[in-house]
Image (cartoon, rainbow, N blue to C red):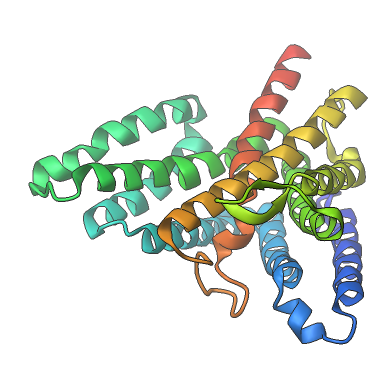
Length: 301
């Protein structure tokens, strides 16, 4: 609570949730229950649950933050493992990589970028030692892709916090949430041209405008929390990266679910899907923000 970002952050987030509920009520007309279990309601309820937990993890840090972070990684990994059909030895390998990845990010960040090569190389020891070669290439692909898709990419949030503090981390998370919600709102209102019908028949090109609007609102609201090195042009670039990254992450999630033949990643939030159904927009956005911010801050040194 002594963090100067604490009260402004929770005030802004509280206002945003009230505004989001207003949008849900607008679309609901006479059937609020149906709208809350619809796509927009799913996004609002999902972010109402995820955002406070994320903020508690950021501001509490220490043991509490670590527990929340580990729960997040283990939960989204378990949803992925169940949906795509990762076999037990490979699933255990993925779970083992979670604390290793987070510890490297926290204490030896210079080695973080070697993790993908090391993880893929060590993965081959599973069939070698177990002598299980059935579905070999499929399982190697599932486990390797799962690590890169979920664990290594999202682990960049620790690097992001180390690079620029809590402010940029909070800005990114709130902007991704707003981008995710506004994409659906704008797509529902004016969406006509579907980006990839075979992947997601509801995600329209027009919805990308909503992605950018949501990301822009998030960057504008939390601009005060950015390092002073960021210029106006760089803030605009950050908005574009978050908006496009959120949309890209959502499409990747839809692609994997469509290939697996499922609608939702899980049922953690009754009627609203799994944790990954809401957090998928962060998978691409977080590393994009990190590398862009790294370049910006390194150039200013």
